[in-house]
Image 1 (cartoon, rainbow, N blue to C red):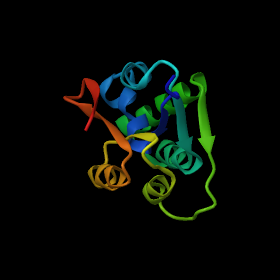
Image 2 (cartoon, helix red, strand yellow):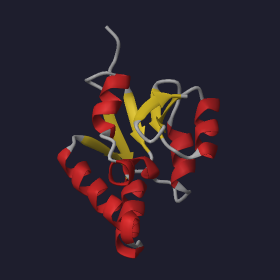
Image 3 (cartoon, rainbow, N blue to C red):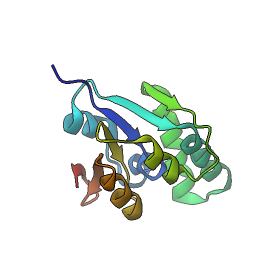
Image 4 (cartoon, rainbow, N blue to C red):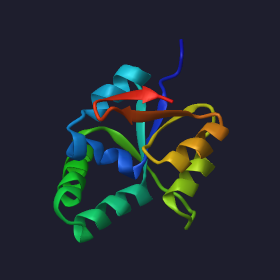
Length: 130
């Protein structure tokens, strides 16, 4: 029996429900399996808090919704000893056993180079592997 997918959510991905109205959690489970384990870096939470504090308009609303949804979902928070950027922490962490959810083009390439899978938003409507 296959292990549940280990899924890592990037900061920009968490803003999708507020920006485009897409239920990323249902989409992730459809793409990765119903028992997939969702994870987020602690520093990604800090980035969302910063957007909530300093952002304006749609970004601020999207970050508030992201935090509300995160509280409702069972998501494992991963702490890092690194002071590097969140993208660098993601690349350091993942291997072929991970699925990374991101919209960041540069991060997608770096993650794919580590043999991890990448799940991304397509046509502002649904998630697909790239």
